[in-house]
Structures are given as C-alpha cells and as structure tokens.
Length: 347
Image (tube, rainbow, N blue to C red):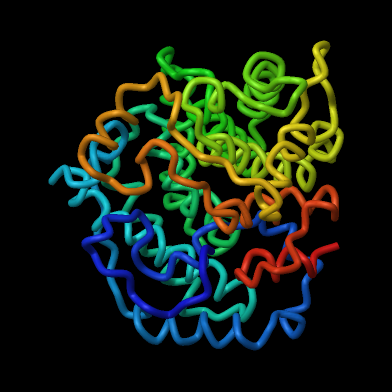
C-alpha cells in the first residue's frame, strides 16, 4: 500500500514493489476480522478488482536467492531480483482480495505463489532481503486450512528454516535491520504458535527499544544515517509485529507504550515522526550520514540520497497508520492510501 494507483510503475525506477505498490503492506488476518467487507471504500474494492484483472492469471517466478541489500539501484543483480520480487506484490494483492471478498481464485493463487517460493528460495538470514517475503508468512494463515498435510509440513519447515537463519545471523546491526528481523521471526513464531520464536522476538524487541531508541524519540538510524526515512522504516516492521502480538497474545499495546529505564519507547519514537508526517517540520536527510553506502548512492547521482534532500511527509503515512492502531493521534486524516483507510475502520 503506498499510493492509490493502478498504473504500473516504469521499471527504470527500480523499486521493489513495482506492481501496484499501494497494497504491499499487510495487516494480520485477525486484525481484519472486525472489518465488514461492505465497509471497505468502493475505490479500494475497485482498485483490487482492477489489479486482479491484470495479474490474476500470472504464474510465480521465484528466486533461489535474493540479491538486494547493499547493492546500488542500478546493479544488474538487484534489478533482476526486483523483477522476481514482483511476485510479492502480486501475493499481497491476492491476500487483500481474498481477505475482503473470500474468493477461491485468490486463495489458489496465494497457494501457488507461496508453495513455489518455499520450494525454491533458500533462506540466508539477511533481514533486509528476506523481510520482503512477509506476504508468504501472512498468507499462510489463510492457506493452512486448505493445504494437504505434506504442503503444511513443507511450508512450516521452510518458515522455521527462515526464522532460524535470521536468528543465526550474528552480523545484524542494531538498527532497522534488527526490527525487520524481529518482525519476520516474531510473525513466523506467532503464526506457527512457536513460543521459542516468539520469546526470542520479544526479547530482541525489548533490547532494541533499550539500546537503539532514545528518550528524545530519535533512534540509532537517525544518529548513524541522519535519515528520517530509515527511522520510519525501522519502526514500521516493529509496529507490524506488535499488531500481530496484540492479536495473538494481547501484549502488543503494552509494549508500544512501555519505556526503557532511560525513557525510550516505540510511542516516543513515533512522536518524533509526527511533526514531519504532518508537514509542520522539514527533515533534510543524509547530511551527516556515517554510512558508506549512503555516500555511494549520493555519488551515483540517486536523487533521493542527495545530502539535504527533504523527507516527504507522505512516506511516513503507512507507518503512522500502523501506529494509529494503538493511538488515534497518529492518524493522518489527509492520507488516502489504502492502508490508512482500512486501518481507520478497524476496532
């Protein structure tokens, strides 16, 4: 879910989610149970139906390995990976369509795409790469009751393999990498009812708040990269996990507000974003980044990585919509993205 648009983005932009990115951010299936499909805005329903008309008969095109993290946007391996990862956009579309309409075709397509990726992709434990496969994790909630036992065993073995690879990666920095890992492992644990995985994710999330978030609302990403974009992208997967944790275990909302000994919390770090998301303040990024990749991106002429470029408020809207699940003050009334509209309807 980014901008409401049925336009296929030109491949030269090299964005992950080049097909219908509006619907790429998913909510836990239980969060959607309180939503009557008739409440979903007509524009969103029409958008989904138009999208399914375009991609409804597409077949999966899985990868053995994702080549994305650490590569410049014009790297051939990354470009090829982006093409294959369009499968995740399609899977997300099937997910939302089935969630709202309960149709068998979308369910079968989720089955086809999920099994194809589980059969081919080999997890490496890189959270930047593998968090892009979250649609497969969420889809499994809908798919499990319709799978044969051998298919269930295959999917669950693959999901656990991915979670264990993430846990076994001892080179994950304490920034947005970690929250992507927490979300992936924690979501898999909650959906598979694996208490060990869930406990690991909760402990890591608490440590992240203690060590990577600060009482003034800033984060390690702000201090290392001088980038609100990475601050926001670090909070987004953490919020996804907390929403899932709330629905599965009733502990997400408490965690959202819980403060560390130094006064840091997820809520305070969302407060840090609020004036920029509202357009009341302007954040000029990358001016003091300490990360070599950011400097390489700027040198390569990538516009959004140029020192001093202003953060666009609308880039925070999806993360604000997730935070609004816990507190209405984060709701962006000016946001017409699907996620904003759907989240506003949830109990």
